[in-house]
Image (cartoon, rainbow, N blue to C red):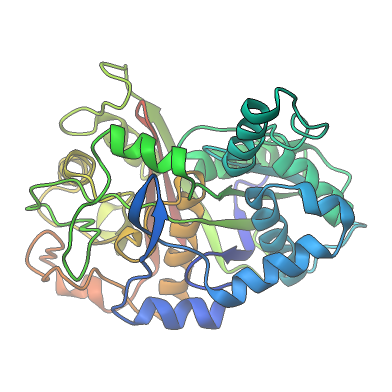
Length: 392
């Protein structure tokens, strides 16, 4: 059985847009996508879908009477999956698996149904079937008329990369030749924001860049939530139309000391990166797209883990959280998309408020000439770390 896994397509819908040209153009500028909205009883910075993407979702909702009752997280996944499979050339005649997860699932719809229950004392007919986590993959399968296995899961913020791991496992086991994997999240709700504020990690920063992801000198937490979905098409073997190849995968979990804890040097990340890189010369890794959500502890511990693995000669480091916020279960696949775009265009997208000295220092200038291998990290509450090495 071939160990080579091809990514033959990737698609997303997020504040960056919903087509590759727009998304890349928005990566190339130094603007963030945070705007103020009244959530959790006050004006709150969040990263919402752009107007074009909102129109696309509204058209999708109106296209089928059954879709009118679905949560936005499901609709986001359907929209991204339609584009990804079309770009890969997959049709309803192809047998492929689907694994699209979410950290929170149908949180907006659940909150609405629960409010209605408190007001009326009755649950609406479709309250249960439209708020189960399995909704995402099952409705994507319905929309694509696929016949393969359908899997949804929640592994907090590393959900999308765990979906990729699962797809790779199915392919390498010979149980499928194709798998659609990713994550979807629509967390911009009052209660979700309130939960992040209760953890004291939500941004109160009034800087030009309010999410200070990868700023290791920040004195306060600056996490901001965003929404969106991202999926990719995996195929076994080295396909001619591959955008990139999955060269290494790694995973690890830490022993919990606290519900949200991670060790001082992110042992889970050290283990996941070493596993993903076990057959790779470290000097060949050109860049790392970090999880780096903009929290003091999260950013710093991941950076220390990278130092432990790579020593003094670090690859270039980046993240997209300063631009689109933390999209929870979708974030890992949006980072995969960023990595693929950088390799396709041979252009490194850095963090504009950082210099090349710290923390994105690189001692070997040859690293900057080409981008052929990029490591992508994600981690969730409880230290569920995943690292994926991509190459072209």
